[in-house]
Length: 80
Image 1 (cartoon, helix red, strand yellow):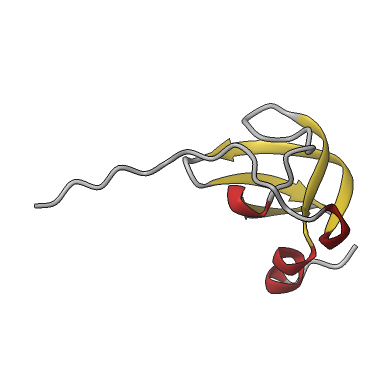
Image 2: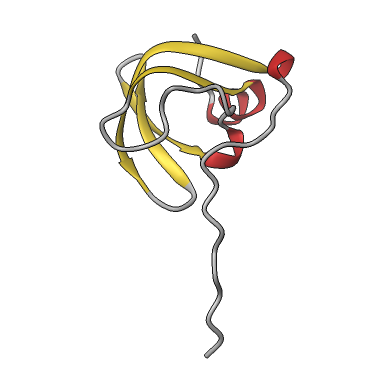
């Protein structure tokens, strides 16, 4: 069986003009590829590839502003 290594990404270079800043977000869980956050009372998995490097939320226990791509919000049907 082939073993595959995954690269952990904590931030990416997303165009800030294509991102939205969401305040008062908390991270409840994390994997090597995504974090589980609560937005508007609902929990959502956010891929690390869609989180801007200026975000304050990256790992379990982090609370603050989450900066994510507008694309991922549309894909998940999250309305702010």
